[in-house]
Image 1 (cartoon, rainbow, N blue to C red):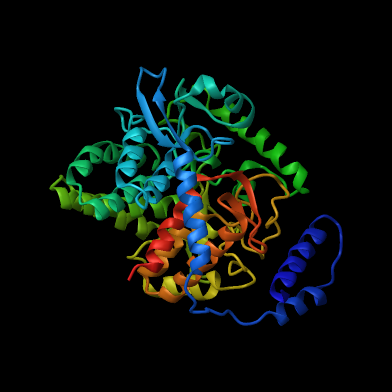
Image 2 (spheres, one colour):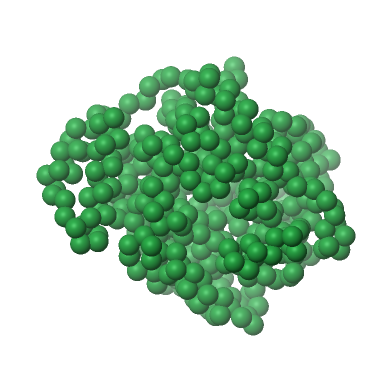
Length: 468
């Protein structure tokens, strides 16, 4: 309880100071002094928590399934939507996460999820981040709730992180289905090639996003400077974001996909996006070798090149962190979010670098190791909003997909005990907060959409921790 109260006091102190209030340094320092050293309990996931969360996750994946025939060229669709009440369409990285979670229900549903997703692949390699299978049935969402640009009446003009390669590899590991890999590999390769061709204009091995939602981290405060969003009281954040998004949309009107990054309106070499990109390239190499497809060595070289670029351009040896790069000038965006830790997901990351990420930052109770880690923004940041006061996403609460990626990164680097503790706390969080979009890292209260699809990745954590 002391741990929780001190964290809340620290948060309120920073808010008070930012908005003209006052809470003395002595109060904050006393709270930090009273905190105990980081403990890794060694306990496994509570069996009652696991049973409850797994049952709910299976229910959500089944109930969120959408199927039918679309007005889009009469194509059939069959996928799990993120949330019927908030997100009724098919999102690119959500579907990849859903496919992984569905492996714990029926691998055929995993394959179907990605087959449906790949129907949105274009001949030039581009894949929009949203497929609007039932566009007319959900016009309210398109008109009132989402800030999106369309390339076509049924798909968007923007991307999301290429998690799909990791998802296909996981399906192959479980099923051994080479025919499925051969079927799905060509559009995946075209998409990765499109990213390299169109989104790496300086040819440094790092791909760029051209608006915040392309990373999936729509309102992360690390984008505030580039988006010209001032630090204001929470009620001002969402309107400022919406106005800034419209500025981007206006700038991109009439510009080709190839020209948009060159405008330097919003150009971000995002650490998380590039870690997922490098991870995906490695997966493409392994999948290509497994089924005798061409060019596995090309994908391996490209993956290593991206990792080398992350180390050369984004790694800050003094801070022990990775920073995103903003604009053509590649200014380091020094806002501490979970993405500064994300190269941990890459098994080839230097062991000394991985150790610093974990020991100095992930396990730092002033930053990320809160009662229910990993918060999307470090608790030390003034923009940290754990209780969702801004009503925007990725400003402090904990997300299950982040924990899932970091869990496997910790395992890859030999931090098995920390990975197990992260899994235990994640499942405990969901046992208290439900299958929600995101969670308060102090209390486990769930926020955002209910019955949220990718939060069912806890099925994968439970399976990993209880097998063998």
